[in-house]
Amino acid sequence: MASPKNARSPGWTRPIAQCMAGTKPKASAPGPDLPRPGTEEHLDAHDSQSSNSSMTTRELQEYWRTQKRCWKHVKLLFEIASARIEEGRVSKFVMYQIVVIQTGSFDSNKAILERRYSDFEMLQKKLLKTFREEIEDVVFPKKHLMGNFTPEMISERKLALKEYLGLLYAIRCVRRSREFIDFLTRPELKEAFGCLRAGQYTKALDILVRTVPLQEKLTSHCPVMVVPSLCAMLVCHRDLECPAEAFAAGERALQCLQAREGHRYYAPLLDAMARLAYELGKDFVSLQKRLEENQLRKPAPRGFTLKELTVQEYLY
Image 1: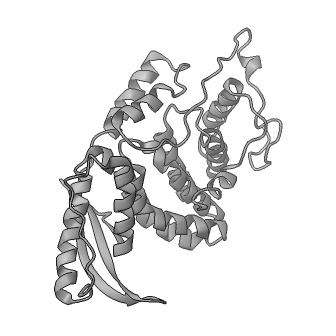
Image 2 (image 1 turned 90 degrees about the horizontal axis):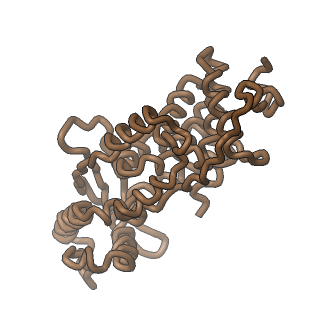
Image 3 (image 1 turned 45 degrees about the vertical axis):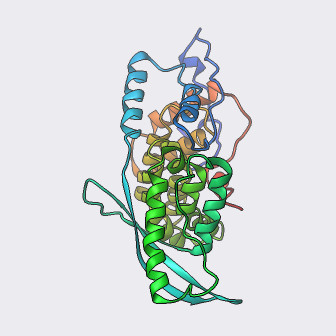
């Protein structure tokens, strides 16, 4: 058998129809792309469309058991740990440090991020467009004409912003919304993917390692949303010649995808994982078989590689 390192060799993706004589492959329905998180009903609609028609009853039962575990609500606590005044090009502003901790158990992966008051203000404007009724009782700390930089005002606003985040998180449709999740993760992820595109893999990994745990907590209701970030970690580790770490990130991504065989990341991820498994002396045959079966169910011209996919994320 040709080595997986010989990219796109005929032997690597050859059909397995000769091993399934007389059996016509089933055509799977196109899987959903990264869904927009919102109401639970919206997410269920996506799940019902996932390409699991070819799974056995036993596989389906295991899939839904895993999904129920994934849907378990993760409770988070928000703190505004500190604030500092910074001088901008035009004017000065206050930068607030947000600490996000998972409650109910010791959290070794607490998230620490920084946002300006204007970032909170932008979040409020976006939420009002979609969830005006849902957040009508949530008080947003207003900006004052004077005294915004006094220690008393900064201390008061720290408490108000902490309460604001807590009230938003208590509303299910809001905490699952793209707007809320992006507020807490997008700036860091955009920087990480920018570093990936620039070939700065170590810097990209440093940001991803700090941000992905929070992204996983925020998207526990829809794990597929974290797949691009996990695949970016795989690409960074692989290009830094750390195949074991790359394989571990890929395993997490595959677990998130589960039965979503029509997802745009599914085949490129399997291809990358099979090559890593071969390099590490692991079982690459089963991964190759899954890839071949997927190609039989969903014939397509040459698609993107995993790296080609990930570098297209967070461009804007």
